[in-house]
Length: 463
Ligand code: FAD
Ligand code: 2HG
Ligand code: ZN
Image (cartoon, rainbow, N blue to C red; front, side):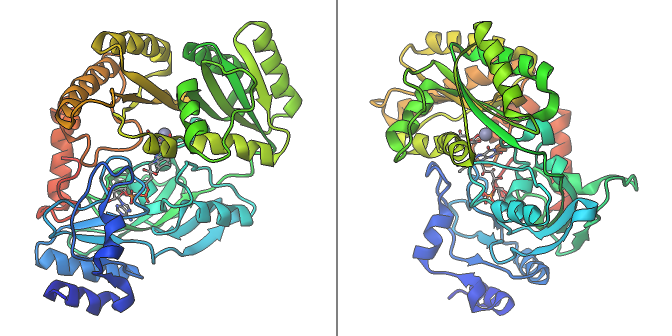
């Protein structure tokens, strides 16, 4: 064991330190397997005091610290670099629900708490924590906050940022910043907790959070709707918002090609339609009588917008529909390499983006395959592209860069963002410099310099 590992073990105990290469291996590889790093050890502190001691030790030795939650992130932000010198700091042992306060509609949890456990704790107290995404059985609250995660309920409840009332953060010098206040109104100076939301482990280690809870929104209705075009989804959303307002919880667009991958690679997955449709929307409402939702869908079918629809009759059927949606990334991963584009545009430009995107891909290379799905209700699409499988690695990267650049330029022209919900990590650093260069990036770097002057927190990520 190295001297550093011995010192770390003195802080976290033998249960809290891993140096075994086999145990480390899954922590070194990004979820898709597209990035790999090296590290000789991972610490798993069990308390904020232990995090403080680890950070102080690493700061004294100028050693990089890579905070890791569930390692489900999509842009290689949670894995170390190739130097082998960085320490992985896993939050998995700090997973307690510290308290649930139903009267204040809030709860305090440690950062290593799995998202699904936080949802369950809220629901056991008669409250609802709305952050929800496919990786919720693995990802952690700290990772959700550090990536400002989105997911399927953003239209109604906002991203992780909107759900955080307070944070406890260990800063790069080992100071504990405690803003664990369960308040909805607080104008005492700058709202410093906001800096850490979406900071991808580069400004501080989040150790706990006070989260905002909601009342149970009422009976859920889930429907899978078949459409003739992606543009029809935007029209359907507008029609549904007019009829049902903010009782629409989720509105997810998926192409036939994408569901085709799910049917091919995910055991027992099959669409509940006899005939395929070019596009689908999986939508969920809460507090809307099933008949009302059915009436809206029937009216839109009569108008020619909806081709077919299946309304889940019970929770089992609803879960089966959601399983199709939540299996997409896994099916895509099995299918093989894809260029991932996690983009957003204003909803009013979504149809133009979809149409010009199609034209662009056809011009760039007619044999590209679009794998598009996502949170269209939030203006956020996963506009992923598969290149021909017979390209060499060099050609794949060269052409990939051009295709990605062309898509991002279109997104930028339409007032959108090249990174809607997964962050920057290692994968999108050059694009951050391109699209956010100037005063915005300068200010980000000034903040990084002020909070972590020695650059020990997740070095090599974001910038
Ligand atoms: P990790 O991947 O471990 O880390 C992500 C970043 O956060 C890294 O920079 C890491 O250093 C930092 N970090 C982690 N914990 C801490 C901490 N305690 N303090 C400081 N920094 C920390 N994302 C969405 O937004 N919407 C989706 O719908 C969605 N669906 C997904 C579906 C699947 C199947 C998968 C695999 C991923 C999906 N993601 C989605 C991406 C991912 O799940 C989210 O980004 C999630 O929030 C990451 O959480 P994590 O705990 O896995 O973080
Ligand atoms: C989702 O919406 C995630 O399912 C993952 O954000 C997107 O795999 C992807 O490209
Ligand atoms: Zn997503």
